[in-house]
Length: 309
Image (tube, rainbow, N blue to C red; front, side, top):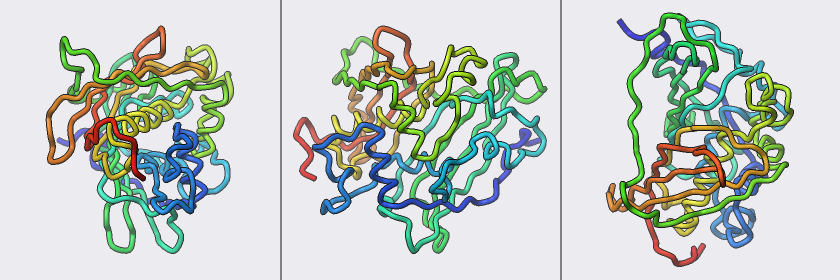
């Protein structure tokens, strides 16, 4: 008998973006003035930062603020409880890149097509909903990116569902110093800027939801740290070329507060998948806990040379 909810397909969601959306995203995840191919629309190699598809299920086709809680409640998964989106945090995200996105969706129709892979009961801590979302050109069915993600609904377990399979782990190599240590400084305003991409969860803007959830106030989007780390890794190992990253994933281990500094330790494993090398990484808040674990990326390493883009 299949697990509750598994295989359920949400209605396709039309998504759209403009060049200004692409520019905003790159600015908010840490792109700098030496990366004008992400930051200037007339650059000859103007490109979308590869992880941009992660924001589209939140943004959809709106250019206006989205009611986050209402959007989360829009479709109920049959056969499982109706979870409270006011107490949800990210679990883990993996993205696979198939085709580079055009810098605007104008004149074309793109859809996010999402199906449930599983809904798992973790007992008292909460419940996990795992999904697969494909970003698809509706005209021809071409998949541009695939995201496997999980959402953790705090203290919403004990409903009698399956525990779920163990997740695959990608720990750092034992006894090996990192090949790179990368730093990214957030500010008190970082989440307030990042949310303008379309992820308007009040948890990241005002203290009340975070106080109720035990975080003591507003916290950074998990996907902010996730995207900013992808940027740091691609710039360091792939020369900032969006063609040089094939897969990227990390697990959300603990919250980040506005103003924290992210410190990424990254290891080259030497394991090749075609031209792409497996990079493993761990991200900590400076002086504190691991915030992103199980980090793994497939990057075409181009050495220490600056990007020629």
